[in-house]
Length: 137
Image 1 (tube, helix red, strand yellow):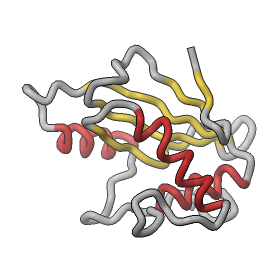
Image 2 (image 1 turned 135 degrees about the horizontal axis):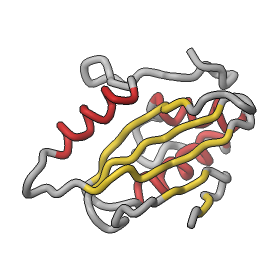
Image 3 (image 1 turned 60 degrees about the vertical axis):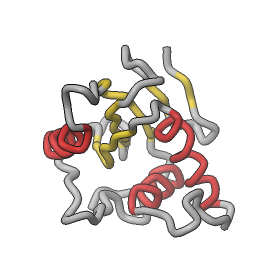
Image 4 (image 1 turned 120 degrees about the vertical axis):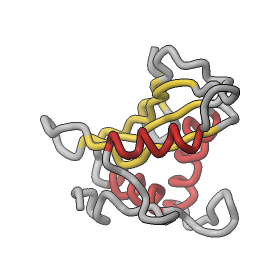
């Protein structure tokens, strides 16, 4: 069963245990009938709260002229989400799979998933995937 965030992002848990370490991806559909575009792949050892709540909250803060939750600055993914939201794109945050930390390195697993969807950061820097108008770069 799907849920929605306050801004209307689709939140899809699949069969992933939301309380365990996991990998997730964020996708948009930039136009009706367009292919799904992965804009971000991430990991968290603390379950689904970060992907399911914090991205939405940061975008709302950005739209309201408030500070980001980290107190430092908005990341490229937040700018992409704002652009997609303002352009009216369908946005989905999907839990991909759990990661067993006793058998697998979560950062390596994240990098593999980023490579699979073509959203690897350059060095440690995330790249924007969308322009400010919501069009793919």
